[in-house]
Amino acid sequence: MRKDQHPRTRVSRGLAAVAALVGLILVGLAVWLPWRVLGKPSGGGPKPASSSAPADRPLAGKVVVLDPGHNVGNRDHIHQITQLVQGSTRLTGCDDTGTSTNDGYAEAAFTMDVTRRAAEILSAQGATVKLTHQADRPWGPCVDERARIGNEARADAVVSIHADGAAAGARGFHVLLPDVLRKGRADTAPIVAPSRRLGELLAAHFARATAFPPANYVGDRSGLMVRKNLAGLNLSKVPVVFIECGNMRNAVDARQLEDPSWRGRAAQGIAGGISGFLGGPAR
Image (cartoon, rainbow, N blue to C red; front, side, top):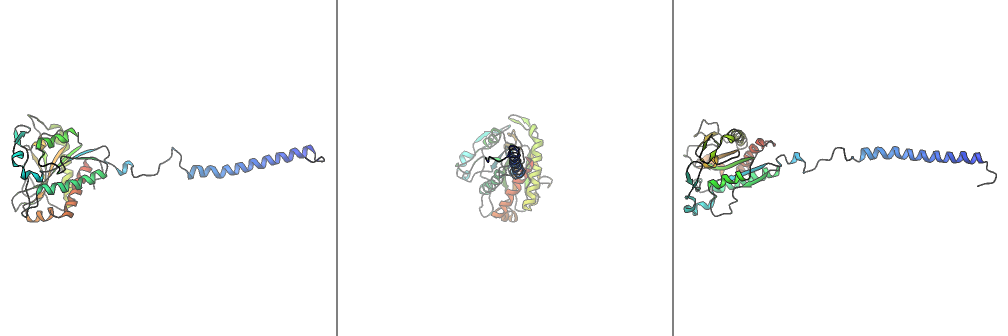
């Protein structure tokens, strides 16, 4: 401090220095705060989208059971699959071998391939997908066990995938629906309406994805048919349908059923119908 400096002058200069410092702080805050607010999202602001967002997994929390019809090993275990099991109202055969195309492509091979493709699509949408079998057992399962798997899983939808073995001139697909039945072990009344909705969506999406016509040899040619004598439908406690994807004995249908790219489209149609039924994107 200089001896000749007046006290008032010293105070004034001190206040000016403080004011300048405050000004610099305010300028800094003016620059920092907007960057902090706008450049960095706060905890209460919108979050960036992520691959695990609900929109990317619309079927999260849903359970789907897919039932690949028959088993390629059934033909080598005729004694086992012809044994009787308790169906809904009477004893019925455990299972059967299924059909095949004229050149030997087995229905069981077809159903397993389409089922796995559909399962992959649905799993990608977040669904928990269970298969009644993975071709990892020598034969079966029996029809009562297949129904029990869907019931015990408390599935939101069950689809049993098949292909038909009708007369050579018959072609097209159809979806089998449960009828009202309250007898023996059957009580299908609660599931008839939702099963029909599932079946209608499945038929619409399958037709669009595959360009296949509804079957010309069953029902009213709508692609839908009510059945009262299938244990897999009658024993179910959850929405269930069967789909006969085509007639393996028809030359036109068989060419498509044997084509891997067509089977991919069939799986897309099946998955799209199920997804639409469960409230997901009906792709």
